[in-house]
Image (cartoon, rainbow, N blue to C red):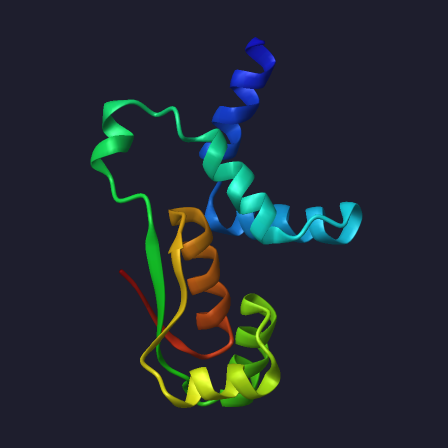
Length: 125
């Protein structure tokens, strides 16, 4: 039992970069989609007590602008949201728009990092 608590604490304390790496490993080696992994990580950290209740637990990832690499952003939005190419392009063209809503802090930070690396301007609310 103590090992599981240690494991849960390690998951909760992962950095955004480590969450991205974990998502990649889970997807490539075990066939688990990153969204399912984020839900599992969020569920593992739900027992945080009073401090967790005071923090914002759901975030919206808002695409403010596509930036210079619009095509890369459209492809990434398509991949992250499972939208079709036309819908992903429409979302990017009509920025500012939410890419994902009501996601955990870790997932929101990971999405923001990925989108910013592709050249987009992103905001978390």
